[in-house]
Amino acid sequence: MSPFYCYLVVILSLALASASPPAAASISVSAVEPPRLSNMQQFLRAHNEARAAVGVPPLSWNDTLMMEALRSSDELRRDCEALPRAAWGTDGAYGRNLYRGHGVRRGADAAAFWVEGRRWYDRDANACAAAPPGRCCGAYTQMVWRATTQLGCVRRPCRCARRPCPDVIDTVAVCEYYPPGNYVGQRPY
Ligand SMILES: *[C@@H]1O[C@H](CO)[C@@H](O)[C@H](O)[C@H]1NC(C)=O
Image (cartoon, rainbow, N blue to C red; front, side, top):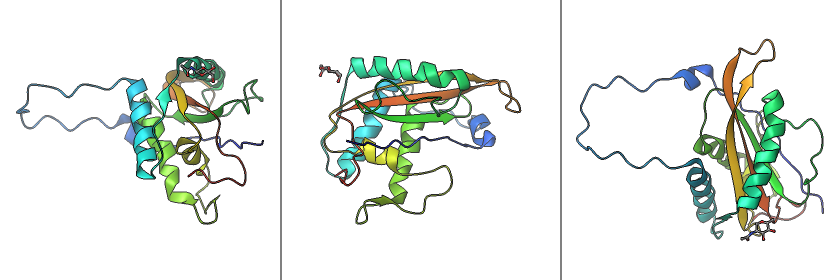
């Protein structure tokens, strides 16, 4: 039993983070705004879309896992990084994906970042092929791991205060998975 973890640091461009919507040049014809999905709904939907795309059954939400993600995110918030300082007590019991993004990010942003790992996943070799520095496919393979049935996630603001980092609000996010995936030598699906 040796699940491997893929620790992810997001280097999103600040331009992207500060991009504002285009000036309203036209008046929307619809008075009804589409409902804004909660972060929980965003996490769940992104996972289940990625799973459906490879024919794997959907995950369900679990509040115990969400509380565990909350605890894990406390740890990440201290440094505002997607890198734990030390091993966590539940390492191995749960699968875990980590995210850090510049600026205020939502659950959908974190999940989209993980899903992007699909690009570097080589299913024939069951390996992460030539990912650019700081990127990998391990978060993606956990998302679509067939034997995983439940998840719980959080996204939380953190203050990036360490020099030369500007004193701004960034975001960390954590999903915890049960049963854990990413067992060496097994394919996710
Ligand atoms: C939620 O996850 C915990 C930890 O894996 C588990 O003990 C519990 O039974 C799960 N709850 C449900 C409703 O499946």
